[in-house]
Amino acid sequence: MTTADDLKRHVADLLAAYPPESTPRQDFLDARFDAGLAWIHFPEGLGGLNAPRSLQSVVDKELAAAGAPDNDKRRIGIGLGMAAPTILAFGTPEQHQRFLRPLWTEREVWCQLFSEPGAGSDLAALGTRAVRDGDDWVVTGQKVWTSGAHKSQWAILVTRTDPDVPKHRGMTYFLCDMTAPGVEVRPLRQITGEAEFNEVFLSEVRIPDAHRLGAVGEGWKVAQTTLMNERVAIGGTEFPRDGGMVGVVTKTWRERPELRTSEMHDRLLKLWVEGESLRLVSSRLRQQLAAGAPGPEGSAVKVAFSELNQAASGLEIELLGDEGLRYDDWTMRRPDGVNFLGREAGYRYLRAKGNSIEGGTSEVLRNIIAERVLGLPSEPRIDKDVAWKDLPR
Image (tube, rainbow, N blue to C red; front, side, top):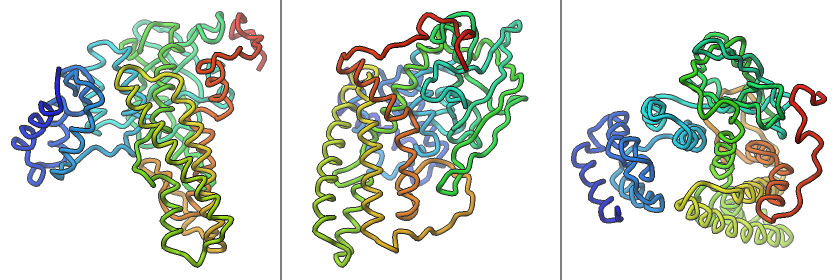
């Protein structure tokens, strides 16, 4: 079994062969992947060493201490956190070789084509159709709230391939080329003024069957892997003590004593305790991930993350008073990635409103927690055995 000392020696060999100070960034990322030091728990030849996932931090710390470049997780977060683990779990050897290396090394950016105007919280109700035509599938439909679609070369896509069976059984999962004919991306301007989200129109887009992920009709099963990883990626992000959104507010509190009130002091302390609890629970969740695939517990972390972000950003606005209402620039931007803590207090407050919607609404996630974590009875469903085509719309 690979040990921490083994990994340190492996990192030292990489640094000796590719000194960070003289090696171009892209070349270093390529070399790190080929050395198996990208995600060490992945198989050999796919950026990993079949090593325990818990030892990834050993590699990251050694490389950071040497000043080595890393990939931009804000820019390729969907690829790293959602596409890669799904491709690894359900992809063919050919798909592993084709997609994982350029994904990790930032040569290809990924987005997620899941939600639709009529299928957001109830994703299984989606209606984007994929029809088999020889060795291809012809896809027509609309997706919405697609983060980073304007910067992406590839997408993970869930479609309806059989409307004659209940909704969860007639779905199929694909890897979609965002540069293919028939793919149109339109910006969705948000309350922040930015347009990191998009709506995507698919008009008779041809996808080869070789880019299907998993079996025909088992798209819901594949999508569950993506969704569980998504919730961990959003809510289980590692941050230091006194970090995250609460850390932003405590920094202002320390630096601006003239803004303090006793009532705000009490609220800030409560939020700090909640933030520390979330940090520890997130750490434990990441440790559980080291032993296997993510489970439904990630839904609880994501709910807690959303509520804490919204409460802390609201307190920051109150603390700053009139100053907190200022907004630096409302010009529409098309950012490369998502930064919940970026820009000023007004931006943070408005952007946090989306935290309880993206990656699964808090209402849906509470249902998942109730049924799959606490074992409570599920809510009554009238669509369980009804063909998708017969469902009311």
